[in-house]
Length: 361
Image 1: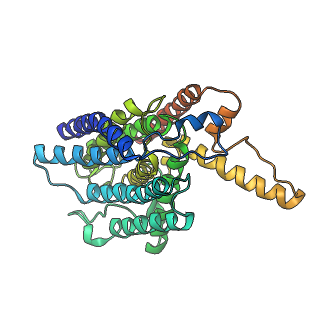
Image 2: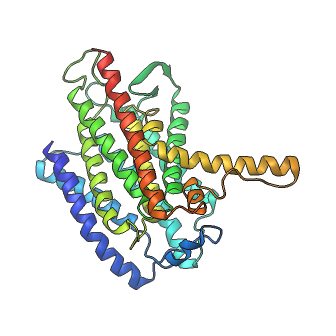
Image 3: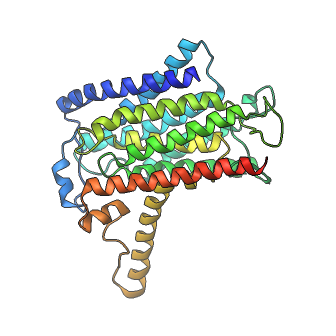
């Protein structure tokens, strides 16, 4: 528990102070955000706001976790190192995307195929290592499982190795892109991430207290290294908290794809490593809604264009948070209400998680 507090506290301080430094230097270097032309016109005033703030979130998380391990003199676990690899790796893909936007002064960075290729490499390497027998612990558990999971592993849904890796790839790319789509308003993705990662910290602590290593009963959780994962969850939560101070409206800095892809990757990693893959759909419900709104918009537009010759839209603009802006909602109103929606999803997810354990008593 001491490591969890240390990890979250150090990450919070590093992020809070480091973001202020990043704003100064990124502004001096001209690392400003480019704005899409087809979005709400009110966003044009944000052009030039420093971006790539996700670098601070990543550094704060890694330093927070490292400090916690150093102070408590505990060795990092395989699960934690894999999660950090996924977190930093996806952040690197986002960094390349952001850098191209800045250097070429355009709102589009990496081409979609190149971006997906980068995400695929990171996700597949993570999946192969997480399922590798080389990383088995003394009880024969690998960091990830070949079984599909909701609140625990579903025994009758064991997948072949190649299919399990494909599922991991799908979860990682879908979640990272979902957080990326949500990062369109000041503080929206950051505030939502605070709640979701905070929820995973609680899930990890509970799984650690009810670990099969402590009590091999029908109530236990067969998860490897849950307490160490809780330290990272606390560090990410603290890093997002510190960043939110500067990212809240009116934002003095944006996280960019560097931050959104990294956070999405980490979120997927938590779902996979804690054996709560399908629970992610509830805890990360806001990210699911944002992604679904884009998929629905594109599908409906292409379908109606093919049938009638004129493409029609379900929303005025996607993702859905921009739709409400176009309806006349103030940006702050949209953000706060979407935070409330996130809170409801998180509360529901934690309630379902705890209710399943109680039902087994």
